[in-house]
Image 1 (cartoon, helix red, strand yellow):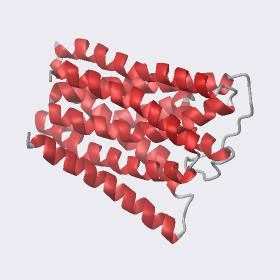
Image 2 (image 1 turned 90 degrees about the vertical axis):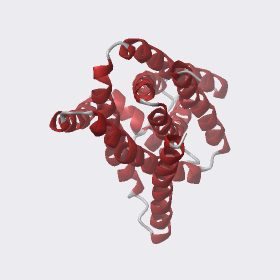
Image 3 (image 1 turned 90 degrees about the horizontal axis):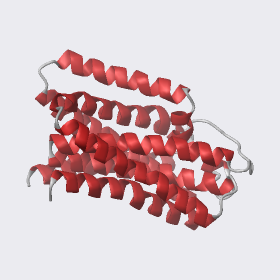
Image 4 (image 1 turned 30 degrees about the vertical axis):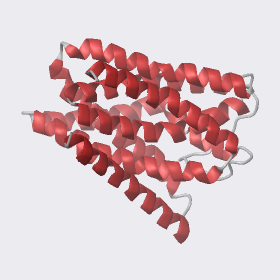
Length: 268
């Protein structure tokens, strides 16, 4: 398969398949699944950032300090984006699901309350989700342009993160007054932004290879920030020993899966 083929496949799976899986999980109304998926996503994102993306970027770079500064700037940038509401609202959408009937467990960092509002909160979710998916598509494309194994590892982490996020989005759309059919259709449409981001990045970055390392550094910053700032604080809401042991086990499983995927793909 060509590099473009990998990008198209990964972004379709990361966007469309994640949205479909999230809809199925949401309709099954098993709140335990969401908390478990969040723990697993933390492991995959941290594993991908520290075991694969950053080592690969530093290996290809001659300016270690500049690359490290890019990671730091990326983390600060994501903080500012979250302060501008759209990014923050999207990544805390799982909290919204936790506030709804059947989703009493809080798995995000803050509490939000939305009644039926004529679709306003749903519209904000769709805008934030589309932007987030577009950025993920760019990051996936950059990883595949650097190497197929790195692209596979990055895509795996993105997909693991997307499913619990999409679960929260889907439930918020329902709570905002959308029918199940409409919520599924608009969520699928939003997920196509990942494919668009991947295709645009493929065309743009193919001729500007020197941009790949900085974008990989930003990809790592994105995963670190989301895992540490948005997902992990929610896990601390469950502090009993059994829940903690499950969270640690699932985080470790996510890290081990990324490590295993990296070993397999590098052995191609």
